[in-house]
Image (cartoon, rainbow over all chains, first blue to last red; front, side, top):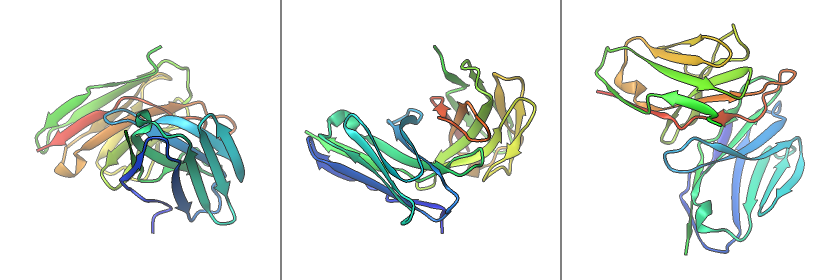
Amino acid sequence: QKEVEQDPGPLSVPEGAIVSLNCTYSNSAFQYFMWYRQYSRKGPELLMYTYSSGNKEDGRFTAQVDKSSKYISLFIRDSQPSDSATYLCAMSGTASKLTFGTGTRLQVTL
Amino acid sequence: NAGVTQTPKFQVLKTGQSMTLQCAQDMNHNSMYWYRQDPGMGLRLIYYSASEGTTDKGEVPNGYNVSRLNKREFSLRLESAAPSQTSVYFCASSLMDRGRTGELFFGEGSRLTVL
């Protein structure tokens, strides 16, 4: 079993929809949780960075962490075609390296 | 600001050939990483360097070597390429603070095909 599980999709939604992306993990030592966005043929770029449990909001994006369930989510409100990308969750404990999910491909249609 | 620069962007090798992927960052970051990305496998860490002068194995180090040339540069070498090393390789850097990695900044990737 992988340390981090993420549904690969693809997930197709109409413009304006609310998108929910999720990851589960098994390592209880993970404390830092991140979401990266990766456009086709580009490197990943950081979207959200949260520590421990709770919510964090940034514009149309909200990240949630539930450490008791070992479950993290990224919500995108009012989705736009420009949000079409692959979304990668990533997490780390006190170590210096991140563990990534496999990524969920999102397509926002007009 | 260039950020993280990788060269080459594309490379085709024959089985058994060797090559080096170059990576440089201009953000004064102390930590640098090499990942490979394969369909259905996500990003997997090959090697990392927490600080200048140190390197450590990641999840999939076999068949690779690295050199942290200085604070800016971190190279990845394939000594005898195999078809299983066909992948997209990403270099990343971050500012590590008290053992915790901060945001990773990625390069654009190097697409390697081994025939």
